[in-house]
Length: 249
Length: 232
Image 1 (tube, one colour):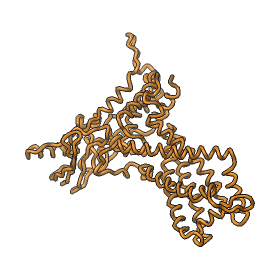
Image 2 (cartoon, each protein chain N blue to C red):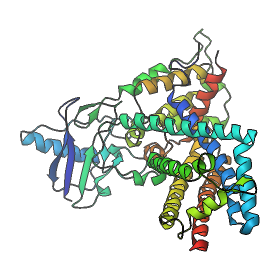
Image 3 (cartoon, rainbow over the protein chains, first blue to last red):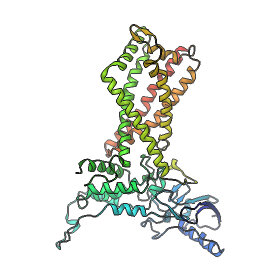
Image 4 (spheres, chains in turn red, cyan):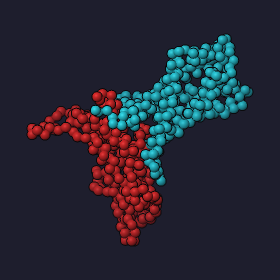
């Protein structure tokens, strides 16, 4: 198939960028989107031109690196997929495909499609520690009885790969789904309970400091999340933040 | 010291709580206001006097006065907080997407709450000027010892008296349509913001919210339409 690509080109942080057009021929429908981008970059390098910078790592949908806003959607069309799991058969022959970086004040563009998502790392760090017994007689985690429903919910929250699709797709660049998933995965389990009050307060504070927008409950994040994380996590964070603030001394 | 560092009042979440609580409080106001207005469907002198006595009660009863000041405060808070949140949200994405397809993942109303709210603000100012101001400070006839707000209302939608009656009826219906969309997202959203989410109760809240967002604005819109038609 033949496609026309319009890809964001930006030399560096704080520089003006623009869409650059490239025609691609003989694209196989079995290629992943990243493989197609590899071919584009290969063509550019052979032609003595600068390739596009983009983030990628595992290419199996678990690292959360491949941040691309494709045709107006985070990770492109299709649900519960990252860019690396998106195949060219999802597009029509002759289609024009727009490829942009995540756009958020909290995720500054480093170059082209690559953005700095270290704000997420700082939010995780602000969450602090989980108390574990290191006195020698450590207890196996599975020895603590946990209701199946709680374990399942915590696991669902923990599937967040921190890709940033929620921020990218939210019209307010809000990081609520990410932070809520991280808060939930620990607060739902007995191991995470001792520090749960401080954790939610610190993580929300850090989220605000990073300059993410506010949640307006559009629900776009849960639709575009490659791991299908539900906004019920956000409700959980909302009530934990409120109750933690009201009951903290 | 576990309290929020940035202060719970300044937190983005607290602004959401404030939006939710004031919004739900204003929903209660809408119910009260609509129930009062429905008296306009009662015709004749009987209907006129009942409505005027009701208006007199609503503007003089001390308990209602306290409630009305709370409503003014709620409206102002909801507006100011809404503007602050909207500005913060715009700042959070300084460079816009070239192509963005929000319609694939969210409802139109949820993405346009600020626009809908602004339409309602303009409506509110105009509406208060037409009725609230006249009732409180304007020249108004006294019938049977009470101010005749009933005739002011009827005349406003009477094409023989007000040249703009037809236009106003249209604008009122348009404003109520905006309110319907605003409530359609706002009602259930307020519960989510307050952290109320439950596999069994949330679908009920969503259903009540949808019903509320259709019935209340439809009830309000029916009045100008009715008054305009019977007087045309």
